[in-house]
Image (cartoon, rainbow, N blue to C red):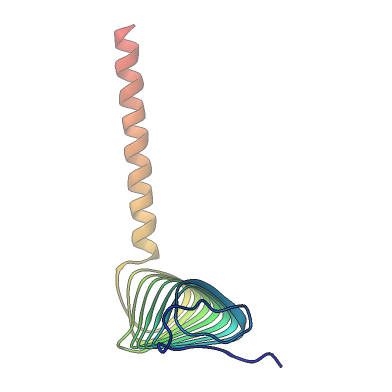
Length: 165
């Protein structure tokens, strides 16, 4: 069994080696089977099981990712759980949110949570209330509108070019 990689805020200057133990890695990459970050940060985290508690990361990838009172820019995992946390982009097979978590964009097969707050949600199944600025239907309508606008501009451009000739 591979030991867990624990990251805490005690030593803030060291980067974590793959599979070893270290403390906060503000500019480093961390990888291993089990990653635990407590009051620390990392640039890239890759592991089967990733837990972040009162910390953050720019990019997190794993089979199971759990963030409590923390945040991440991008999360890609089979299963994501956010508790009093935030993320800019979540891409998951199954994403769970508590009512104090938010995400900018959520793309998942299934989303669970009492209150899911996001700007854009793309999901096959949603279990719970969703507060979003843009859903799948809205994104489709915006895409259609943009496509029509671009084709109209292209038509006008070709019309004015033919008159100049």
